[in-house]
Image 1 (cartoon, rainbow, N blue to C red):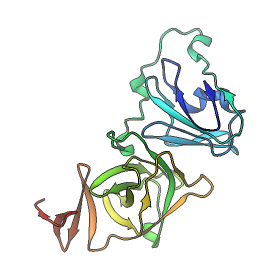
Image 2: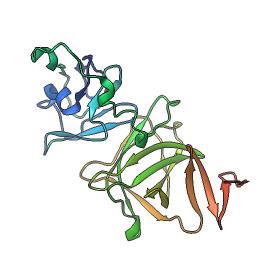
Image 3: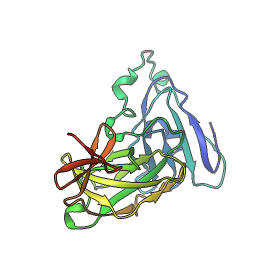
Image 4: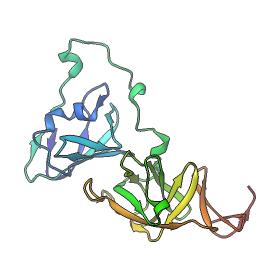
Length: 238
């Protein structure tokens, strides 16, 4: 596969899944810090210090489309080496056993054609600082447009897919409860990368308090003084 600076569509040319670091082994000596590879719902960033891809994307799957953002200024070639053939094996492992791109915790709506990626953590009162296992949900209007779970460092590798120029805000959940909401929104832009491994984007939160937002089958609702409303302000039954 010929790669150029910036974004390149990256077909996966093997017919069985491989761990990302194995699948892209040929690219390690050509990669630069901050290179990004992404699918529709997941992405990973190349960390030059550890020589690893870090993020939500763990596996490359046959039949899945990818894109790679190359930070280097020169063109290069990526070769996918057939590990099964080299090992003399003919049986391919079942893709379903490795399928992480359908993980519900990485929800991204399928009716948009583009996405953007955020490496983020949350800031605010001590109880609103993101912890491992917390969930961040991206919302635009009344629609959930992305969701991710914090890693062991409290970082979110969040893929968002929405209308171009849409305003996207965030909800922080812990143990199933929405505990914080963002003070300001970000503007959606296709293929944007926000935040880095060394300096994640800080989502500033305030407490949900007595008026809080929640999620129900991908839709947003608001609870005020114990009553439930949709985002248009119409009271609804539970």
